[in-house]
Image 1 (cartoon, one colour):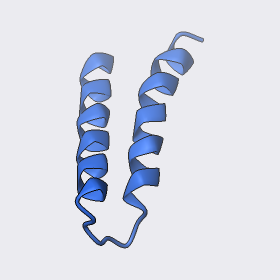
Image 2 (cartoon, rainbow, N blue to C red; image 1 turned 135 degrees about the horizontal axis):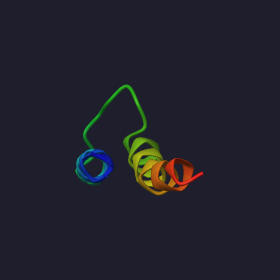
Image 3 (cartoon, one colour; image 1 turned 180 degrees about the horizontal axis):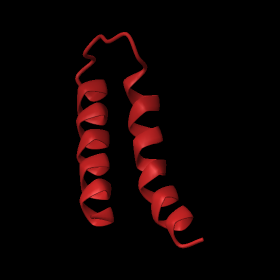
Length: 50
């Protein structure tokens, strides 16, 4: 289950970075969103192992 969540977060991060690369306008900073999702993929397993 945890692996599926990480894959979904990575896909969403990729989409955010791709949209930012093509200068798609959005109400949120797509680069920051992509970085936040990427960081979550590292934090979730680390917190789950505590």
